[in-house]
Length: 135
Image 1: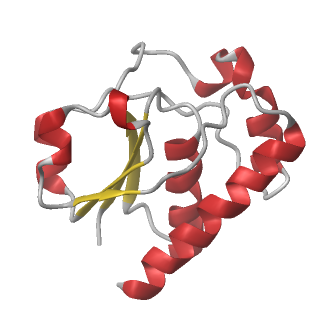
Image 2: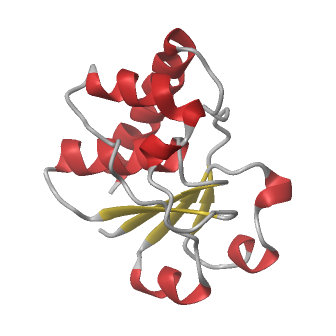
């Protein structure tokens, strides 16, 4: 199953979900995008991602060189499920209306310290495992 994880800026939640899904399933079936992205910026380029990157490295996952990607309508045609974690006001109407849409209410990691980042990552991991077990 091909999955797209979406958050606001494609720096935190969606990057974490993609990395965890691909690690758990030992695949490359997940991708991540954002609804409001400054193209070409790597995750490591975001000062607010320092603790997030450290928290993922504690799980032996390096997301520091991941590229951030802006979601587009044609991207969703190639996936079976689109998991959106952006705040409702940052989700375009067209995205809410696609058949593959599923919403997860996950707090934004941006600006969180290491302890809070780990807690949010743990929550995302539980949701990813539930998704995998359902399908």
